Image (tube, rainbow, N blue to C red; front, side, top):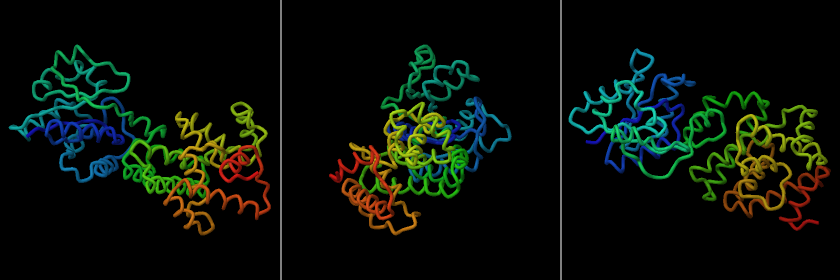
Length: 365
């Protein structure tokens, strides 16, 4: 058998980890063992061992080629050097071929590892490319490392912990939300409890609509969730501070009605507090209340989800189904319903962005 040892903090495990492991398993006709560290040599962990294992199990599912070994987690020692893990696998599988999988960043410093020569003798070193990390030519030659070719995955556990990206299996994302790991407590502290539940419902509704419209690819789960999750994050900011942010960062919209300020402030917070720089996500937050002309599919779905998510105090099930059936035509229905509802309430809905949205999509003058 071919056995690949894939160690790491997996804090949390993300889709990049799983896709790389799946590719290696196929290419080498191997079983890949994820070996989570108790405490990384480089940093301390931010979740419990139980949570880390639960997320790994959810991410790997029932794939027979991807397994978990708890060797490092069950040791009394806080840290385990990779050579110790490799020796454990060599004793456990003495007749099998061992490989050790690492990123290009780790491969560059491999010569500094504990007993690097012995590790490379016991297991063939495989490395996968990382963004902006040059190939470690000296170590490749010295230790006869093999490149795991294929596309780059723009995934980072650090980005996930800070909420700037969520390249995650959906089941892992739900686990993080349910157990309030990583970014969740910070986000909750910036919402009222009622507003947080609304934001979470918007995010979930947007994901359901995107999935039903075949828009929910791996890399896009993050888009729909983040835009929905943070869309109202500006509402808790005091009015005077909202005005200051508007005057400094969005002077072109300073004359908009004050109810709309929170959408611009929300985009500002998403960028400055959480490091989100993707313009598609920021614009979905930035125009979720007013709409505008030439809206992207993400903007339409977030706009609609905000108006019709199921915790709203009215029956929105038909509009949700309309969005699920076809988000383009469903968006028109939601836009009409929202316009008529606000007008029936006697509210003045006229402002430059809403006016152009209604004129463009409903031909309203």
